Image 1 (cartoon, rainbow, N blue to C red):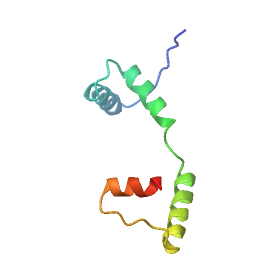
Image 2: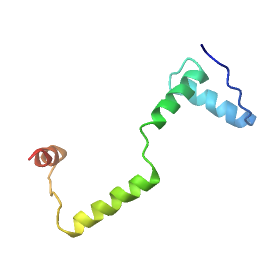
Image 3: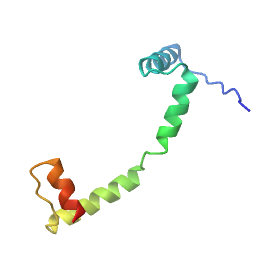
Length: 80
């Protein structure tokens, strides 16, 4: 069962959201908002990003780097 969610936004923001929904090919603002909520599931937190960055810096300092001439070389080296 569907429910209506009412938002109070400035007119400029409403116009921007409607324009983005149309530009992105959505039939409705609802479809666009649903897409954004689903896309949010794939985002990582700032904490996770910083932790990954610190780990990468540590590995770089330890010389655990891959020097690749291309993306294909990099992918091949990671499979080993």
